Amino acid sequence: MNGRERFKRIMHFEKPDRFPLYEWLGYWRDTLNRWYGEGLPHGMSVEDYFGFDKTEWVPIDFGPIPRFVQKTLEEDGRYRVEVNEQGIKMRVLKTSTSMPSFLDFPVKNKEDFEKVKKRFNPKDLRRYPMTWSDELIDYYRTVDHPIRLRFIGFFWQARNFMGLPNLLTAFYREPRLIHDIFDFWADFLTETAEEALEAIRPDYVDFAEDMSYKNGPHISPRLFAEFILPCYKRVTSFLRRHGVDVIAVDTDGDPTLLIPLFLEGGVNCLIPLEAAAGMNAKSLRKKFGRKLLIIGNIDKRALGGSKGAVKKEVTTKYRVAREGGYIPSVDHSVSLDISFQNYSYYIDLRRKYQHEVS
Image (cartoon, rainbow, N blue to C red; front, top):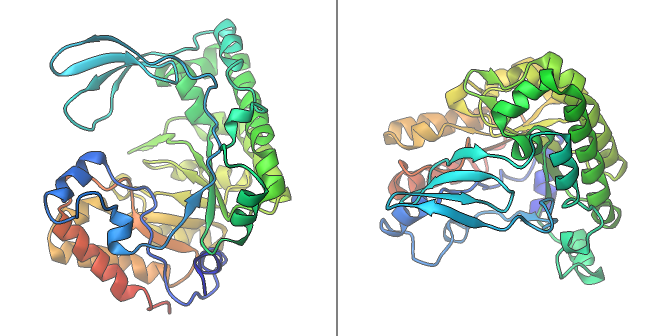
């Protein structure tokens, strides 16, 4: 059984020959720098070192074209204030990986939005890789590992346009503008991806959203149902017409209140199930059954603890994985507090459980 067949079997609650070994969301740069000093050979990727199963992104560009010009506006020994290629002004810590402080955003009103829209022409040839050809299409159709396509989600893109505080108040102060942004984005996603989906059939499509925090989603189910749900229905219907049947939302935090609406909107998979926010693979399986596929939920905090904590966490999650529809992976990018020794032990445990599929 090859990797593509294995992925499909798990996502359809069928028995695979073994569990795949993926780390779905990767690693912080500072984590890798630490590991290069603790035994990971310099120049070698974690995936190659541990012999991970392969997945592959279809590299379609959903960003602004042309990009905004990146500018450094000011800096000192510790911080740099810059405008990034999304047009977002932010203050960045120069010495390590951390979340920046966001200072300003390109859209404040309808006039700004009309200007920004010009950077999102779905038919711009630069959205597809220079290698896009019959040869590449044939490769994607016949390759033996899962092919993935990532959309920028509705909430994520609106936040990139406006910033979180302005976006949240605009749901009430400028609802027409918010409807226009979401409707525009649904059209942009489907028109941009149409050529790829006519040519190939990705095994998995996800929406990058990050629309929750530790205690719940950033917006209420009522606002989601009014503003975002119709757009999800449009795009997921488009995906299913093109044969895609694993459609995920990637959001940190606790999105539990929104899960029924995601399901109604055609989403059937959730990642990364952040344990620190109370997400629990076993509880989700009990509550939603086979309607919800899940990826992630291995608590990164446990991997920074004792070997006993690591073993307990991995053992618990693989018990749920044996029920099907679940691929264990760390519940966020692997963080700096996890040593290479601990991570190696964690991988050894996952290898131990790889063939225990029932």
